[in-house]
Length: 367
Image (cartoon, rainbow, N blue to C red):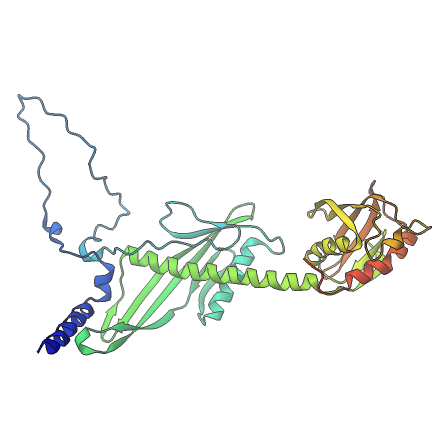
């Protein structure tokens, strides 16, 4: 008897636990009798008496026109707020912003910021199989086609089944680029919504739910953007560590230089590895101008120390300068100079070529 009672009690507890729907889990528990409460009239003071002083300490702030006054009772969700996640380097959000917006700052000069953002967004939509209904790069506006997702919705506990729900959403993305072009805000706005569960169709949602939908898709776009940056950085590092071909040549000013078969953004960090391998110390650098201020101390601990300590004194101890420049779309030039920015003569460059080219072509240099 006791065993039977225990089994029955357990089933009742499970059944009661299953009675709560997804909506119940998103709304406040308890009753909503406060909705029936009416506002009391203010105290009426006779004209011949002095009115007492009323405190405003606990006064409820007035609502502005943008507030949805229908969000009360079960319509008011108690979920944690939907937050935009600034995962991309150089991104941030503005506090108190009601719209789903994220700001990007220019950190990579290889392409304009607006182009980078749109390319990442288009890549995300293509990866998700979502069409583009309208895109105008001049107006900085993109409207998506319907985003359709299907998910299982729990039925009442006593049916022991689940129902498939289909949710469709259409969004508008707007990019607000600052005049200087190095900062831009990407905003998303839910244009259309339709959820179908069996014969039930929902085409309107609350402003809070609307914001959750907007923040959700924006965070997906941000996550995709960050993934692309990390993937590109991984490929760039692999390219930097990979050996590069070098030959003798002349820079744009006609001075003798080493011509490296790689883009500037690869050769520049590669030079730091090569110089360290050759026994140089980098004292200062200016990537914007491609200048490296180095010092050679004549140490013979390096494998080519003997080369510079020969009787011919190919390179004396002291300070030097190097200039890395773009030499076309996929080539770069490296010019050795003395401490007065005077380029080396052709014979000096030729004498250094063998050692420099060998290290530049070496794979897997330490970063």
